[in-house]
Image 1 (cartoon, rainbow, N blue to C red):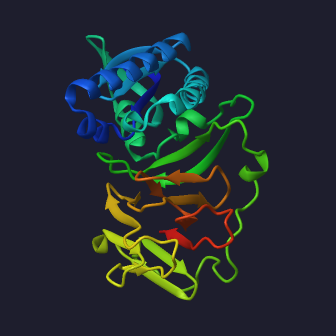
Image 2: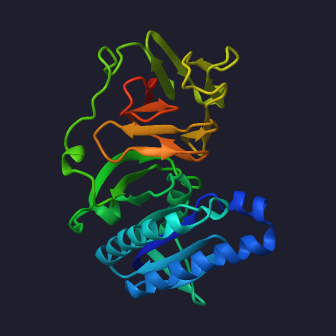
Length: 304
C-alpha cells in the first residue's frame, strides 16, 4: 500500500556542457560536489535522500510544508553559492515537487508523484521550482515566497495534464508582481482570430504568426530564413529556437546576448543565456537586452 509523500527532484541545469568542456573525470568531481551538498541541505531540512541520479537528487518528505520550505531554502542557499562557480562549471538548479502515493521498495521509491517530480524538474527553467497542485493546495508558504498558477501542463508518460504552480522564492520580488497583470503592448490583447488547433502564436509590431505543433521547431532571428523574423540590431541571426517537446513549447536561447521572458500575471523575469524554459499561457520575450531597455525588441506569445 502506498504512503502519501511529497517528492522532490532537484537537478543541475547545464551539466552536459560541463562534461563536454571538462571531460568525465573533472566534470564528475564538480557535479558530485554539488549533489553531495544538495543532499546534506535537504537532510538538514528534514528530507530523506532516496538516491542520487547522475546530476540530480531524489528526496522525500512526509509533509508538503517541510518540502516547500526545504526547496526554497536550498534555492536561496544555492543562489549565494553559484556566483563563486567558474564559468566552466556554472550549473543552475531546477526543482520539481509532487505530492502523491509512493511505494517504498528496498530503500527506493516508485509512483506517480516520483514521475511527476522528475518530469517537472526537466520542464522548468534554471533557478525555478515547479510543483503540482497537490503540493500547493491548502499549504502555507513562508514569508517572501509566493506561488503562481501556470495551469495544466502535459507531463511525459501521463495521459492527463498536471495542474502546475511555480513557487517564486526570490526574496527581493515585490508582492505586487503576483497580483497585477504584467503590461503588454497596446493592441496585443488576446486575439479574436480563429486559432482552432494552433499551439503557439507570436506577435511583433505588425507581424503575427501561428505555428502548430507539427511545424516546430522554428527559429526566431534576424535572417530572412528564420521562421519568425525580427529585424532589429539587438537580435542575433538565429536568436532563439522553439521546439514542441512532450506536449509543451520549449524556448531555447541560442543567441550572443540572451533572452528575457516574463509571463502574464506576474512573477520574476527569467533570464536565459544558452538555456531553455517552457512557454505557457501568455507572455513576452525580450531579445538581446532586458525589458528595462526601452529599445528592446519584445515579442508577445500565446500558447494555446
